[in-house]
Image (cartoon, rainbow, N blue to C red; front, side, top):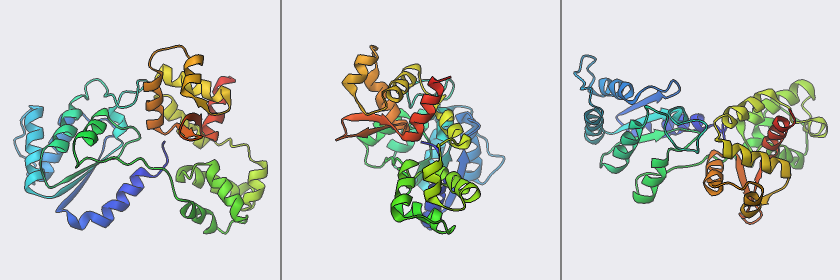
Length: 291
């Protein structure tokens, strides 16, 4: 799910561990640079020579990068990783022309070296799961949002009024998502006089900024994933996978559900056997259904 603070957390981590590395390099994949372009940029920085002769062959460029990662201790941060992945398909598949990124991730994950690559992404490339299963050096971490006390601080620091139980209710409503909570905090301050209670008693959850965030992710879903989202929203209650299969008589339900949970759009409830949507996501989907 977007807005969880992945980049902020990564930058905070960098502050804590940068002394363990000789050099820290951060690059954004937001504009989806071809791998050859990214490698060329990295090799120029690591070689400290703008005029270095860099071969066109991708495999040789990756090999040279691995050599630098082996001979020195570097931290590479790649942000916005979802931009090299294919929208409107199940999670983790590369956009056409970006398949070579898998070679990079595989080489960095499997080859011995003394550096670290941190990929920040709303979606996890499939190769990462494979590397996690087969190597001890590759790990992924899905951000779950702020813990309750940290989330409460967003409101307490602004002097908001409201009982602890109402604050907890508000935080759960927005899944401890810092992006959503900051939007809500501004609204409570501007329209409800800082009263969490008044907001909860009167609010309708309609926030364009939050809906836009959800919409960005919804538009990346495959048709089958969208169909599952519509079914869960229409049901209005958690469903078993078997119940979803009865409603959607198509192949690939299991893979699509795994994709949705990987995106953070579907939650497991009731002993990890039922699936549902977060309340605000459900409201967004129902609004699309009513159009």
